[in-house]
Image 1 (spheres, rainbow over the protein chains, first blue to last red):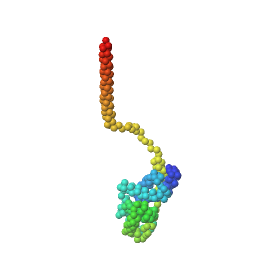
Image 2 (cartoon, rainbow over the protein chains, first blue to last red):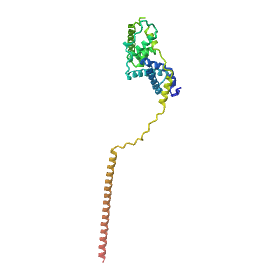
Image 3 (cartoon, each protein chain N blue to C red):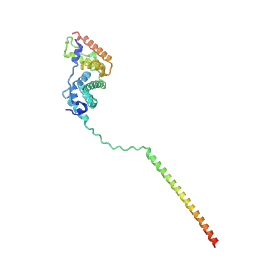
Image 4 (spheres, one colour):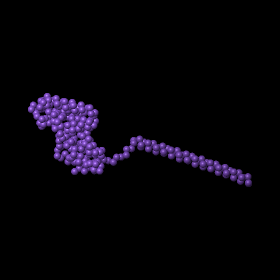
Length: 173
Length: 103
């Protein structure tokens, strides 16, 4: 039990926020970095930062917004700091079997790896859209960019993924 | 294939390791622990280099000034004594003149 911030101070407990949002924060980082250990490290740093800023958190919704925003920033920072290029170039993603079927676990893995190869901004947009199911307007607010830019990233990223998959015969089935 | 549906499926949330919350708690607790400051020598008030020189100059100037003031006071006292002696001598001459005339 973490009792490091009083309910009177924040309106909710830090430990509750960790329990409730650890999956969201970890997954955002994991889908961004495509590395479980790094994602856990980034997620922990995000929660440590949250603890330092508990006095600034006004509501549960604000906490979610803050966590999403900070984990994306930290994930981008981590990518740049370690000069991690995408582990697998888009062109190098393993060819899925020609007989791939819908909901094939392999397809999910291929999609995650393809997402991890996208440039930072479209990657963040795609993860927010399909992990968190956010609308373009919400993504625009979260990432401080025009909604038109968000929609453009979504369309171009989807087109790129579709092209890559179809080229390998996945999208035809 | 519904790509967006597949993406939602592929990017669904995942759970971190089971001890994730405990490790966050440990790091928060470590962060909140009082920091032991290293023992350092008490900081000595930094004396500007020019200060001793200025103090010496002031002492010298003060000494010179005091000597001049004392010399001046001596001169004034000397003049007062000389004036008193002249007055006294004048009085004595006057009395001596009257004594001679009385004889």
